[in-house]
Image 1 (cartoon, rainbow, N blue to C red):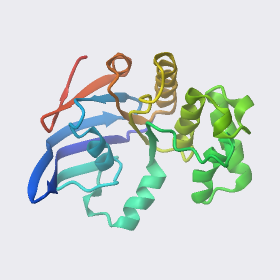
Image 2: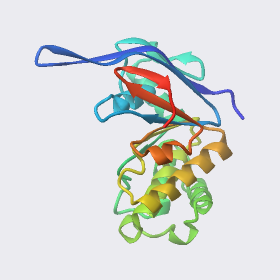
Image 3: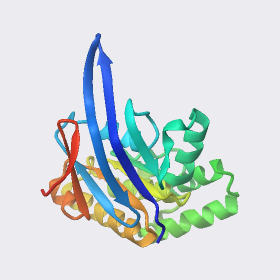
Image 4: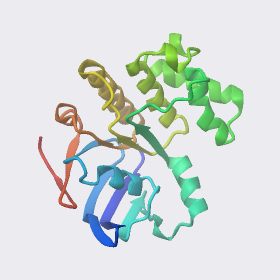
Length: 228
């Protein structure tokens, strides 16, 4: 297992609306290590998506540091941030965002081909990943022919296609029924632990949060270790 981790150190983020400052993160500190999956919970509007965007290098903090594998990402330019994001970060969102005109396998192949992986190798990797989540028989089906849970499983393995070191999820089960959500979280837990990823998953579902290794509670701009 790698020694990669995600660390946020004294991270501050403030938005300005109508001339008013709206502090969202007020000095956030935590670390998620390789091989563990942490749930990020908190009230709506607390800043969970903002925190994930900062961890995923989609936004820059106003203060503090985001470290990936011990490296402070603050001095990176836009191109380097994009390259780093593609190389070591996988994202899963509430809505699967699969391309409807492509099959499940082709959706998993695309990020690899963007990273200059050959078509044959990309398909082999896609079929391997789809097999790990029980979708071998659905590999050549387009998203419209897949159930909601199947679509989200495709989205999860697409996020893993380029062998990232960090998996970020923003309410990845929020659009699923209770039973399917439980199954999808089971897939996430299994893949993170099997591959040695660091995982940070924002969720409103406290029952699912309890199944993860740790719970981080975001409230009033701070993150604390919590129990739910």
